Amino acid sequence: MLFNSIDFAVFLPLVFILYWFVFNRNLRLQNFLVVLASYVFYGWWDWRFLSLIVFSTLVDYSVGVALSNTDKLKKRKILLWVSILVNLGFLGFFKYYNFFVDNFISAFSLMGMSIKANTLNVILPVGISFYTFQTLSYTIDVYKRKLEPTKDFIAFSAFVSFFPQLVAGPIERATHLLPQFYKKRSFDYHLAVDGLRQILWGLFKKVVIADNCAEYANQIFNNSDGQSGSTLVLGALFFAFQIYGDFSGYSDIAIGTSRLFGFDLMRNFAYPYFSRDIAEFWRRWHISLSTWFRDYVYIPLGGSKGGLGMKVRNTFIIFIVSGFWHGANWTFIVWGVLNAVYFLPLLLTKNNRNNLGIVAENKFLPSLKEFLQMLFTFSITVFAWIFFRAQDLNHALRYISDMFSTSLFSIPDQKPIEVIGLILIFITIEWLGRRDQFALANFGLSWKRPLRYALYVCLIIAILWNGGNQQEFIYFQF
View 1: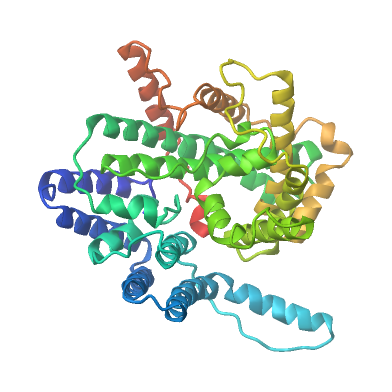
View 2 (view 1 turned 90 degrees about the vertical axis):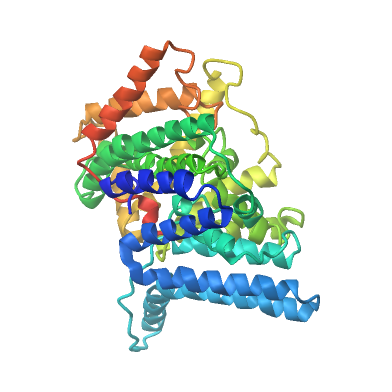
């Protein structure tokens, strides 16, 4: 079920009414409703894959209970590996089986050996990369004794399948979200209104910005051969705003929806395109995934505490794994490697934590230095997005080669003035709201009520006007 669909527009109010007006007196029944609603939400896409979520829930719940009943290190390690192998086994089969088979065949072909191996027509279950990491966080934290294992199966099922963030995050930690299912929740009007504003802004990002940018990005990337260099630059820029509007828009809708039900989800984006270096960008982009890899992969490997060799190794591992998480294609791996190359100079010169605050704090506009830093960081990020969006490595390399041709400084073949205008309005609102959790959190709150409501009406009209060009969220494929 898509957030930007009529189905969800009917589903959400119905669940909201049942949650607060029918099941509100019994916490366990409320949690059961969350589980049921989440299964309906996910099953709307393909009910057959609900079995994967249920099985993963059963495995990790059972492992947690078993961990609570033993202090023997060997047995605890075995239980941890059961969870890791089951979860990553499902993820590996559905997402990476064909990738490894194809590359296995290609490797032997390079050595002059011909082998036959069958690939499978496997459908990638929506959200498997997200809920797999979410359940793993529970098992790992229980193993490390950072979290008490739950004995409440309904609450744990709700944690695993919570529909606002089930299919595209944020990837929640059990230490943060699971305890919220134990506590009685009371309706908070101000929290709900804030949630509605965040949903509205998320829908604007997705429907108005991302989907309009997608139309031109897809046209240019899918027909890149023969395009002028300036047009290809425009295509890369459109994709940069498409993926940001699409993914951060989903996160805003997810966080806003969770607030309607009295839950707090972690922030997933913090205005990453205003970053002054690539390290700051990765503290602000897909925060739930970046911190997951940091805590469960990077730090256990030694982080940045070791010598030069260890620092370089760990940096490349974390970015390559992050790239591979996104998809079974060499383009994602190269995208990860490229970001590691961007990041390493900052790490090795100990400048990776220079920009921890808000850009142009207490100022309306950035300084010239800050502006140039943002422009450079955005430029190298957009360049890396070319690999992320390309169909394969050959396509990416042709795209880049054609882009840096003599036609780079020509007038683009495409001139979507309306979309460029929307992007400029979007950037302006994001800049003005950069100190807040989301751009619309306090934007216009000091205005007189008719003017503020007029702003909301304009956003709603823009969403409805562009609603016919409905596209799936990009991160559904991951």
